[in-house]
Length: 177
Image (cartoon, rainbow, N blue to C red; front, side, top):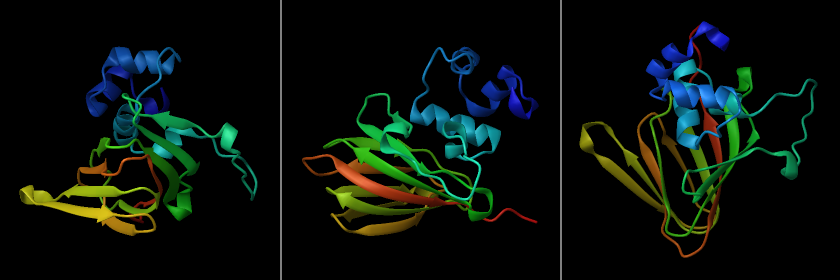
């Protein structure tokens, strides 16, 4: 494996079973979004690093039909990386879709991670779990935007009767020099 980790070590760091990691490595299993997040954190890489190859050159065009779309286990949430993390820019851009009345829980991201999200269609509630058991809840309508520290557990809740479409820019803290 890259980074010199055995499946056993990666399993311990990520909380994903060795058997599942082996199946993913061999292309025998498609991981869920949550599993990919766990692996990314264990490898200390961004989520997009695991799902997209970077083209060489100064311009990248991502055709809709060629984009990798990841879907949650129940199929109610999907994430399409529009433009992945790019070293110096330290940001990722996603299109997110959440089925009517569905909830998608996200684990804490790396320290210093910030989510900038705009609701393009539908109604959404963002629930952010703060330290000490404090919970923040923010209801968003079409056209509303929010920015929040995402290095704590948080959830996306579709409070509307139709699919909610969002665009997300995820930014990461500067690496120490």
